[in-house]
Image (cartoon, rainbow, N blue to C red; front, side):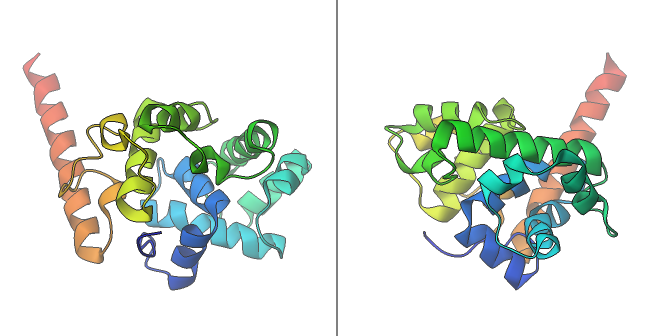
Length: 195
């Protein structure tokens, strides 16, 4: 790994994301409709609420209501705790069924960037854009760089950009990514008005 992730502003949560591939996958799944710091801090909170390390097999086998309860405890891990608990459980089930319960196997044995993108995109909770961002995050920040990874992550794999979570390595980078996203939204709004 190139260096530790710095996505949440919480050292313990960032360490977990860096060291635990399942935590990173869960954080990425939760990164929608809430601030990204909150989404990526949620795996640590979930681990703490469970009282043990995150394990794909255990989460996949957990009674769904119990997992929803853990997600719903105050403060809720997501603004949609029930649906996101279901997505996390589906993700863990896929990791168990396709990767023998080893979340790192999603990226550890790929032949090239296209295979990596395909594996990530096949996981529950990952559409095409989110999968590309995740491939960029793996490459830019964690040193997972199979041949063609930048092209597979396009446009998020480009160096020296501030387009997504893949580019956040400091509080200043977070500000730049937020500015970029606000500019995109403003452009989209302006475009909609002129139609």
